[in-house]
Length: 147
Image 1 (spheres, rainbow, N blue to C red):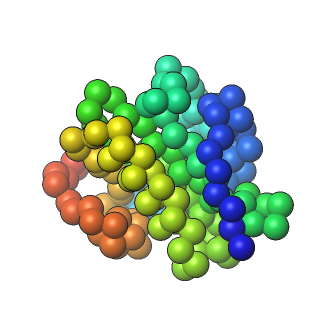
Image 2 (image 1 turned 90 degrees about the vertical axis):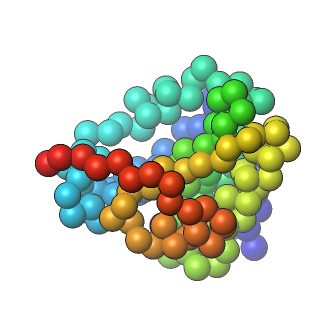
């Protein structure tokens, strides 16, 4: 059984291995842009959240049998909530862990009176797009990038 709990920005290093698996997944699964994920470093990416506080940053982990199996990071800027990063270990997918993490964050954003809640997802990542659609997200814009 999974337990879910929030951690602070100062504790974020406990998700480093999961975050790295997420980065590797994107690097390996992207037909056109995998090379862009190769150079992203955990410490650099996490620094982007340093200016947030407990009212504007939420980090939740899923733990099962003393092993971290998932995480979700979300932010709020003004009245816009954003799911920034979510990952569940490959062997634990399909058990509702990602959905539970996302729902906790979506509820938090609604409690904070966010008028807009969004997520950025790679157009190539069809499984993740399907996951977000199951949570009520729909495509709004499509940003295209030249190779």
